[in-house]
Image 1 (cartoon, rainbow, N blue to C red):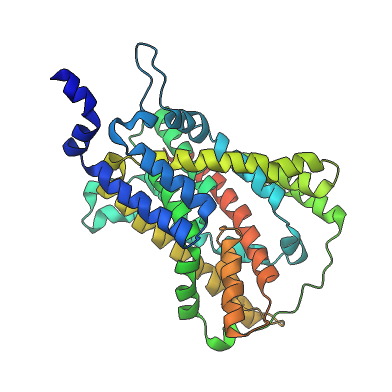
Image 2: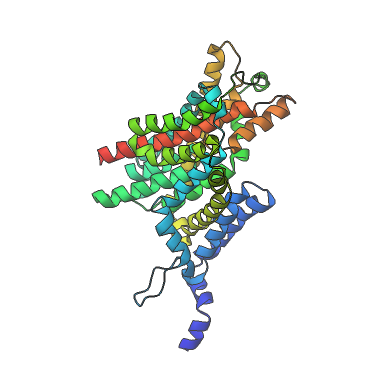
Length: 399
């Protein structure tokens, strides 16, 4: 009889806990968007397959190490050594820096304001998460650590979300503060909303702007960015933010190092490796690791579902904040600004900028806003990383 149980233990475990099967459908839903709809497949395909692997019977890929020397599941290893140590998010930022041209920000510094404005969504969601218990949802038990982890989703930046959530978990262990383990939930939410930017942002943009505003043309940037400026920018940015917000130094520093490799022109091999081989390897491992944090018993609970709704609220308010500031700047500026570029202030690079360009083309064929939108988009990356450092500092001082 015991032999029969061993043979069919996979099937028996499904009947005992069918939540894993529900997660197969969640994984299939994300795979559909990644493969059939081609919505950020580099993110959704590994994440969704990681969810599938984590919800196979007996959880072999996420099992802890056995007392008799049995190795831990390989995806649990990636979680502990890559996610919880911040290694994988930082390596993604290295590749992102090497892939990014900061010229739109350098040539038009006021776009930094639009990137900063979008961070308002982080704080709206943080406050909303703290207040949710007062609205009859006290069972969710979200405290400051959870609220900070949820709020950062508004930046639409997966690596930064993982960085913040992991740091909040470390602070809870360091100071003995109780915290719900939501690293996986916040990461999946952030990456999901990054992938769904083309579906979420257009209705918001059209709701808050007039057709006339969406048709505003902006001339090509006049300022030519010199090579010297491109080299000095990452160095100066690292020093300034590292001095003002030391907790942001890991994210901003590695981002700027990647960009310096790109712009200095003397380490092409290193830059190419960061952009291609290293980035591809890290994205595969990161996606699988993030997805594997979502077994059914973790995902199918009220707190996790609430995080997805709160994360959507964070992303929507971030988009609205950028749009409203762009509309205000348009009123005060001599040169007209298409307010749609404010929506690109979230740090989903380059998805948000592409959305702005696609809408501009539909509203007025030939209207080229991509480079103008890239300014706030890149500024959003720097802004979200800086806000992450500010939040870690504030939370550490309050607990």
